[in-house]
Image 1 (cartoon, one colour):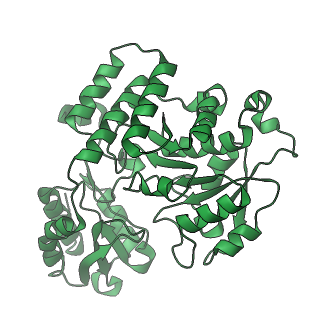
Image 2 (tube, helix red, strand yellow):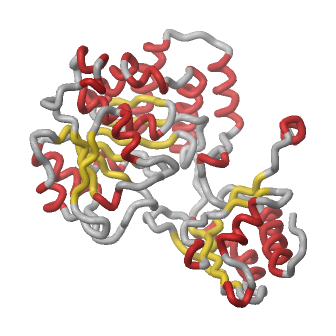
Length: 373
């Protein structure tokens, strides 16, 4: 409803940055919206709803159990707390007063200690853990991860994300082998990942996904894993999980979205390339601009448009140009992780052909010194 933009004085947005939390992540399908509405308008025994939807999702994904949580970052905090508290009722209610003798170190490769919108370490601390880094920012081998394990290690946390260092870092499978050999649980945060089964199959005890990113559900998160470990996460409903509980509508909406996700045909990277090719051709007509296709750094089947600016030729710093496009009548958001190198990326998954044309004309107008959309 465009009237809501007018009612609250909100700017319309072109989301060329991907499934980003700052822009509301994604747009669920009509049947997911309908399921959310049904959930809002009916009552349930919440424990029963949690357990039975979890079992249903686990059946779809081939896992022992599953749990819908409020978001992926809440999933990290609750999974960390679960591996520390386990079945201890006293610890559940006194997590942050836990005696030092209780194992609470959460071990992760140094190159995975990132800020995804908030620091990973904040979620670990919220879950009662102490973050311990293994290896170096540009290197973490299975041997380096194993060498950092001590009797105080409660779990290994592996962040599978484009935000993380990819160079010379061990794989999820290798981390699972280390965890298994040392009897330590492995938690994999796969928030934006598209494969809902592989990390569990690789040997992770708990895997966390965002419900609103690749799955395109309502604001929510998903935890799948071994039955005992998921039971420990469920127990956190009486601990830190109380502050991050998910509503009935989120549980039902995500369950429907997962079912859709597994059965509906997905847009391939090749189709994304086809969609963006005329846009790239147009950009390459602009002086000081070079555009090309690039592929997702984390290995997902996602193609994007890379735009490289010759700052001397265009008379703009790339960061300033990006900010100017956000400040237009229609806010245009790019992936700006390499703006300091004169490079931005366009994620076309949530952008229409008409919006791609608006992006082109807006960039063109700014480079000509004109007002843009």
